Image (cartoon, rainbow, N blue to C red; front, side, top):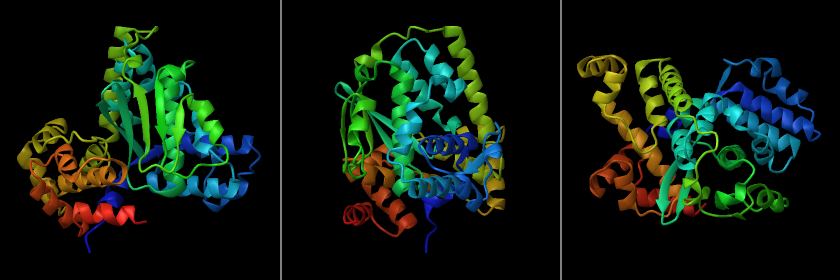
Length: 344
């Protein structure tokens, strides 16, 4: 049976421990005693707070699901995300503040979102006067995916619009069922919020994003860009060569770098890259197909695009090639996969 490509990519993603610490503290502020949870999962709040401590995405998701189930707190991700400020995103948040427009701030955030260690990525497409951000997960599901999505959506709205969320957010769609506290979501986003939708999407006003950033600082923006580039490259520099490349691909939603580009970024010749991957029993083209299929699966689950459109979006020049690659990795055709998902 083929390996699950989502699982292989999920293992390469890590999450800062402070993210889980924030979730635990928010739950405690709302009456939950986290002692049992931390003990059960063999975690320590002090360790989670350490700047360099990171969790695998799988461990993080397990902890979040446990926390939500046992605390019984609705909209936990929303509550955590509402308390965020740009400074909580470190150099990434500072860079967005220094951009000369909200649109450039958004572009900056999307380009370097991998340095925050999210297990939900955002892809972007413009439809008329609306920018649609789709949550593209790396294998999460259930309560963990919902937590990450609402957390990321409200956090980004806060970073972009600060006190005037209504001028940026137009509509929010969640795939989860409508909770009893739905009004809390509408109040937080200050726009229409719908539930039980096929996709998790955040719609932003393209016109509002053209607004100038009051704290624009070109020099600081360039400095943040350089720092983010260094951090991004450093995060990809640990583990085996194949793990590093899978990490790069997992962070390159829809713009997968070529074999030559990756070799150059690692200071290797293409021949050396291929030889070293061969020593690990891996072929670059197979990893690239896995990454494309992971993204295609997300689009099939969370978008209205046709199979032909998705094939083009993930880098295939024709539908038959996409079908063959998809079936080789998943044992299903794209249409069979979408039909199976929609029937659940």
